[in-house]
Image (cartoon, rainbow, N blue to C red; front, side):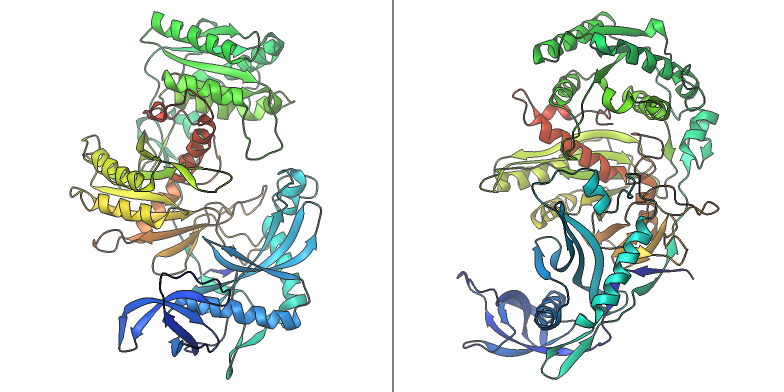
Length: 637
C-alpha cells in the first residue's frame, strides 16, 4: 500500500496526563495572557457534564487542581504543548521565533529563516492531534509572510515558491518545500526535540514526517453529446460535440475603441478558427455554434466613461428588443493591468458586467493587456470560446457522478465590514445550485441584512423555501458544500433549516482550499498521484485534486496544495458513505467551465469564491441591487 508523508511530526508519548488549575468561568472579563478558557468535565465520574473554566498551568489562589487526561480536551492539550514549547525555545532556540494566533487556525510558532524587504520566510510549528493515529504532535511547513505594504508581485510569488527563480510556474514546488523543511530540521531540531510538559514528564518530538496510508479515488470521466464519454474535456468535445448545444440563434456584439480594431479582428479570426486552427478549430467545429460575419455586430466606444458604457448597454438592449428570440453576448475589449492580486479587473469591467447581468445579457470581457501579446490568443482562444458557449446557455460537458439524483448547494457569503471598527455592517449569503454531474442550475440569494440576528433568520427561512419550492423535487439527496470560514451561528441556522425539509437526505461537507496540511510521496518528484487521499480522522480527509498522472509522471507546472474536507453532522441520519461523496467533490473539480483543464477546485466552492469577488466590487456601484445577480445563467464564468 502506497504511503504519503504528512507534514506532521508526532510526539512519541501516549496516554499521558497533566495538571492544571481551574476556576469556574464568569462573565467578568479577565485580562491575563496566562489564563485560558476551556470546557472540562465538572466531575471525573460524569465526563459528559462539562462547563467552562478559567485555566492556569500554574498554581493560583482560588483555583483548584485538576488532572487532565490527554484526550479529555484536545484544544487544552494543544495549548499546553504550545506554551511549554515556547518556554523551551526561549532558553534554546537558534532561530528567532514568534507566536502567531489565528481565530480560525489556532496557535502557530513561526521560526524566521530570513527577513527580507518583501517579508519573512518562515517555517512554522503548529500543535495538532492526528486522530487516525491517536497522536499529538506538530504540523510543520514553509510559508512566506508578505509585508502589509508590499504588493503581491512576482518577487512575492517567487518567495512563496509559486514561481521559480526565472519567474515561471514552479514545477519543483514540492521538492523546494521539502528541501526547506529538511534544512530546518537539520539546523533547529535539537531546539525542540524534547521538552518538559510537567515536573516529571518530558515529551519527545519525532524527527521524521508521519507516514500515512494513501488511498485512491476514481478518475474523473466526462460526458458529451449522446452521453459519449472521455477522460479529456477538450478531446471529448472535439470528438463528440458538446453535451447540449445552444438551441437559439446567436449574435455577438463586439464593444471596443478604434485603437483595438486590429486586435478585435485577430480575436474574430481566432474564434472562427482561421488564425490558430491547430490549437482551436473554431466555435462552429468545436461547439456547433454559428459564428460568422452575419452573426457579428460592433459597438464603437468613444471613451470609457460610465455614460459611454451605458450607451453601449442601451444599444445591445435595442438589438435584443428587435430580435427577442435571439441570444446576445457582448464581447468587450479593455486594456487593464494591476500588480495587486486582489484587484483582478477594472472598475469599468465591473460596471459593464453588472449592467449586462441586470438585463440578463451575457458578457465576455477580453483583456488586451493579457491576450494582445504574441501567441497569447493562440493558447487562450479555446478557453474564451468555452466561456462564451457556456454563458449563452450551452452545456459543454458533465462529469459522471458517483451519487445520482443528488443536489449540490455551494453556500457562499459576502459580508461587508467597516475597515475602521472591523465590525460587520452588512450580511449577505447566496447559494450556487448544482447537480452532482456539475450541471449549473441557478444562483439564489439566501439572506441580506444589516443585523446578524435577522440575517441568520433569513438564511434559515429562505433555504427552506428554496428546497421546498418544487424546482428540486426530483432530488433525493442534498449535499451542502460549505466554506472553511463559515461561522458556527451560520452552521446552526443551516442545521435548523434542513431539519424542516423531510423529503431529502442531507450531507454537509466543509471544504478548505487554503489549509495547514501538506504531504509528500515516495516518487522522485515527491508529488502524490492525482485523486490520492489520506484520512485524518473519522470525518476529515486530505485530497490531492492535482498531482501525478499514471503513465505521465512528469510535472510541468506548479501543482496546487491538497484540499481539506470535513463531514459535519447536521442531522441524526446514519453516517454517509464518505468515499462516494469525496468522489463527487473530486468530480466537481472537473466541471469548471471557465477553461479546459482549469484550476482543479470543486466548482461549488470555486464559483462561490468568484461570486464573492464580484459582489464586493458591485457593492461600490450606487445602482447595485443584490437581486439582480440571481439567475440561471453562469454569468460569473
